[in-house]
Length: 168
Image (cartoon, rainbow, N blue to C red; front, side):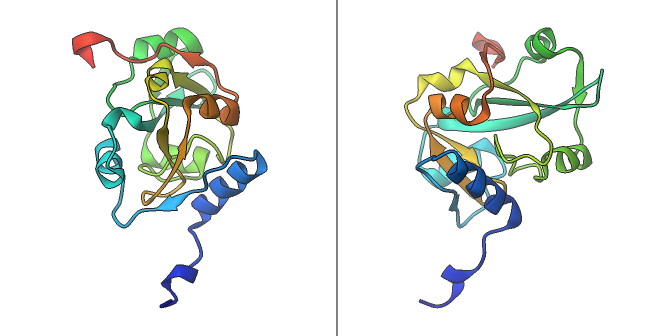
């Protein structure tokens, strides 16, 4: 042991690990050597299909300034019109908004353990896979789960929120 193994996890990762542990989830966060700020980087680092990455997209709901988290498959793009139909008008969320509402920096937004609970939607496209991976509160941290686990851990509804066919 060189001591590096004993380095404490970043605060966001600790928050996610505590949330996972509190709900009895079997897979704790895993720190990656390289950053996984994008779905492609995460898939490459893990050696998995891009679609197995549960990417977190944050919008700003215009009516009440709430964070809206859409968790979708890494190989899909969110259809903003579908999100609007479900939660009301939304706008883009800048880095400061994301950090203040979630407690995470862009590139490490986990689906749980947020500073302020967001309005959350889970894209049905994630259910194409038995195992998916999500950010765990830091650009170098991820954790494994099944799509049904994501629904259980977040309590969020599953919806059709991805662009279809050649649009994605």
